[in-house]
Length: 115
Length: 114
Image (cartoon, rainbow over all chains, first blue to last red; front, side, top):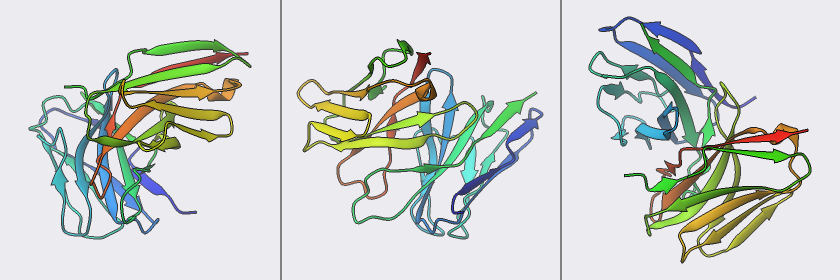
């Protein structure tokens, strides 16, 4: 079945460590996104990528980095510079339509906890 | 600056009755609006959408209404079922965006009691 796979589902990190969250999709979608969910704040966009080898900062990119070397993969690295990394991270993708209708397909999320 | 706001953090409704979830926005460039549903520890799933050229869109038990002059949209669920209990996010997209940089509201927790 086509879909988006995020791993790991749960991750614990010590302060000062970088961690990488994996996101893989087999939907043949062009665009991929990383969102962060915090209680009472909805979903906020971290980074997005429209095509391979290209990505743009979202609203809260500081302390994060991404790469898009393959269409299917869009890993997110949470660096030690991210001051408050404990959150639920969601990866999403969107099929390219002449003009996007905004329908995102989400993975099941990764919960990162900093100890 | 919260451009999409869901001012009710939670809503409790009896099974069979109507659920009305509200959303307000401030950016007049938004021209497409969506509702997503999210269960705990899962990713959101798309529910229904509406273009700014319409004022109503219906899909089964779900209807979305858009009032552009008030910059307000609402999601009606009739009749409500216990399986509808979830967090509902309103989202908006600005015109001319090719790849959907969605702006989400904070979410409303809907609880439908049997």
